[in-house]
Length: 176
Image (cartoon, rainbow, N blue to C red; front, side, top):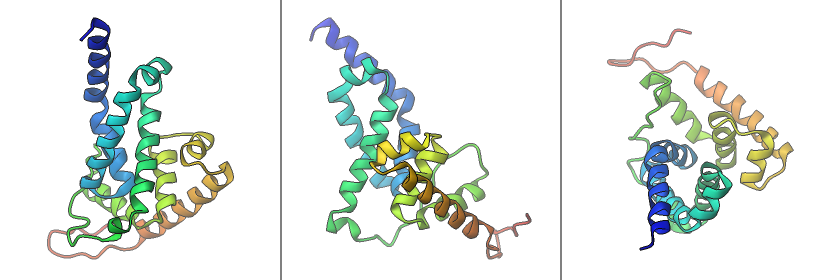
């Protein structure tokens, strides 16, 4: 392999090592299942490797990977066999160091109750901090549609998260 090929691979490996956990959480937030998130991330990283020289030169690998994750999830959700659900849904949780475990779990449960496009808008707009225009571009929808989905999703999330949660052994009462 040539020296430039080694440099290419080293830059790619460095990027993946630094960003893999973050990108995996994005994939999970988009699809709601850790196993599917791993599949989406693997697809995205494979496609990134093929396009690495161009993407690295342009300086936008995160945006490229996010776009692949979102579009791959759309493609996967259209396959009839993907509509089947296992009996184990909801038994794994994301790791987000910014919130206590209970709040993180409640947020991800509420996020998974949203319709697919609203969930994607929330992840891209509010979790990743993309602009309305960037979100619209990644999802191939208009800016107005992004705003509409965002507004509806935030209202739905607030309604779900403000509901009193059942208490019981090992489940503290929420006081807000």
